[in-house]
Length: 340
Image (cartoon, rainbow, N blue to C red; front, top):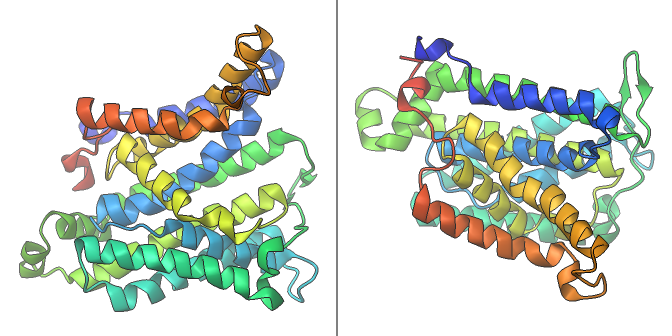
């Protein structure tokens, strides 16, 4: 079978997500609600994968673009502001604002490489968080912007508190994002990103301009991260406080990309399911199972799954780096280079 025509694992995973959405209620699985967080962080991971996986730029500030997206969406939709856009216009605005923010960050910093670029992006994340806290007149400070109106979908109407329609909305947007990233990966721009990642000097000698290629990567990754932030704010009808978009979010996105496989779209989906699925699905169900059998006291510190989360993350990362350092689904060089 021709490799370029083989069924990609990402489509198998997305097909499984469709099947889950269809069977969740009849079987009483209760997985649709926590899976929405997996879908949002898969979007964030796709954004980081463009920058770090495709282009080889160590980016530690993706949480900042998620925050920018959340606040851009909130300002565009909340009734305390004069704009009051609908969900779809506000989402388009969010993506554009994220891309512009990525471009503005990239313009003065892309001459840096490696650790120096990582430090700059880390600092940018901290600056954005502090700006959101202190611009009370616009961002409402630590209160966050709320309430946000729910999306209105054609043929469905306004989404309420039921998880199903939200799940299908998020899954549909993730499918579109995967298709866009797949097309970019196989395009001339994607091949330029790969060349820059492998050897920037050699890419320059072959006629590829590294700085514009990096700028496109920064803008694309920031746009996807902003989209994830907008969906997150829409889901909870609030931006939450700026502290929700801290350095830990950026590290979690990086862990998703590393565990899944650097430069692999399939790997991002698997990494998101592995990392966020453990935190949002596996640990809460395990804690409930242990509490129901009296093994763990709910008032005990071990009774809260959140207290296990980072321990499990750390163990997973250590095992991955020892057993499979290239990730669960590593990128195939030939596929990135155009499916040969």
